[in-house]
Amino acid sequence: MILALETSCDETALALFDPAHGLAGEWMHSQIALHAGHGGVVPDLATREHLRHLGPLLERARAEAGFGGITRIAVTHGPGLAGCLAIGTAAAKALALAWQVPLLGVNHLRGHAFSPFITLHAAEPAAFAARLDALLPHLGLIVSGGNTLLFILDRQRRLHVLATTRDDAAGEALDKGAKLLGLGYPGGPLIEKLATTGRADAYDFPRGLGPRRDLAFSFSGLKTSLRYQLEKMTPADIAARLPDLCASYQQAVIDALVRKTTFALERTSARSLGLSGGVAQNRPLRTALERLARERRVPLQLAEPRHTGDNAAMIAFAAWADPSVTPRPLSALPVEPSLALA
Image 1 (cartoon, one colour):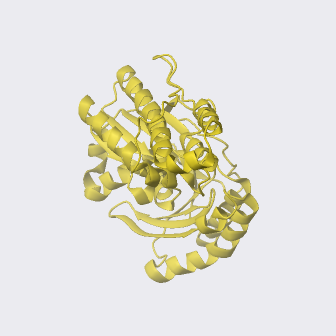
Image 2: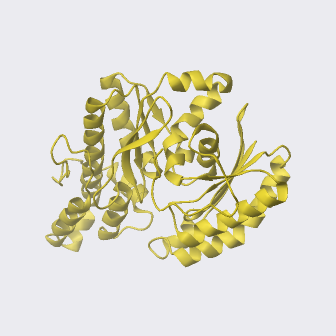
């Protein structure tokens, strides 16, 4: 049984994972409402909220599921906000010391990489290894507010990054676009909601694709293009055309993600495709990846919506499924600033 803690940004989360049966419980406290008034995550406030809520959340988990039988403690140790990561790491070290069980440090992005396989395991835990092997090598797309990357998970479950973004992440581009449009935070879901009544071809925003052989993403030009477009419009025009602006802007992000993923499928021998990360909740993006998977005749592994954002379930699952995650001395759990490769 693995108890996982996730405090990398603005979600305080816990999860219990039993390899023989699956997730035994999940608990979370979200800070979205607090940070919405500031237009984004305020690190000092996020750290304070983790201090306030992690203890009560642990008590709630103990009362509802019990902590008997826990043999491992897993914790996110990067990337993320330093102060927030420190809260989770300190708590995890204390629990591991008190219960005399090994401590596992899990890279946050590795958690996202393995999150699409949580449902695969839940369907038939005893057959998971064989079912996963049939999907490898696996091409994954992680799309979040801070990261956008393509990776390959090879037959030995080693992770190899194929491409990242040169500038803004896709989620960051959506949030910044929403800010330019005068919307609130988080911007991605607000753009998606308004886009449902707009025309995706109303405005021709750049896709930032580059040469076919280049898999790297770029979204800064898209954001600049939106700013230039808004400068040519009156406030009344912007209000009247807001759904079209949102739909066209969102479509430019989705097109870039899908095209780069298509290029990666052409260049690799991937036997499956995966989508994870906070932006993976976006319904038009999920639909576009489903269409691509059908066209390329590869199975698509989608992270469940509740496991797309910051969550402890993916940390617990990666602690078990990722062979690169091994017990760490309590005094040696450094913060990882990026995705550590196998």
